Image 1 (cartoon, helix red, strand yellow):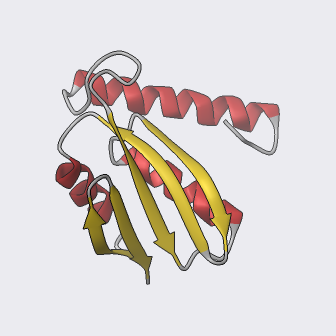
Image 2 (cartoon, one colour; image 1 turned 30 degrees about the vertical axis):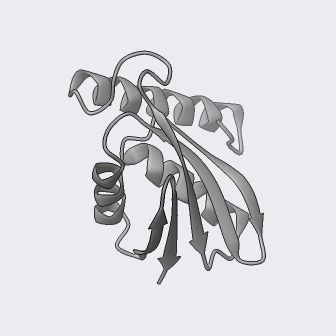
Length: 117
């Protein structure tokens, strides 16, 4: 995890691991690295700062994604790749509940475009 100090980075890594373990124990995601997970691409705009893009990735993990990484950030758009082991609509619903500033624009296959209010 990226942090400003080694202590902060360790704390973020521990929190991320705890979220993953709790999701597995609650049956929200399958056990194992990426077990049964499907990769999806999220494009979100407008995103003004790189830190904001990483906050979106963290929100995706909070919504149950086993992985969430920022692939690209330019021109006010953040493109993220996420892995999710359940129905994509379920993930999208959880993400939109956690982030009321996001709204769904389009969904095509394994790609979704969201707008940030």
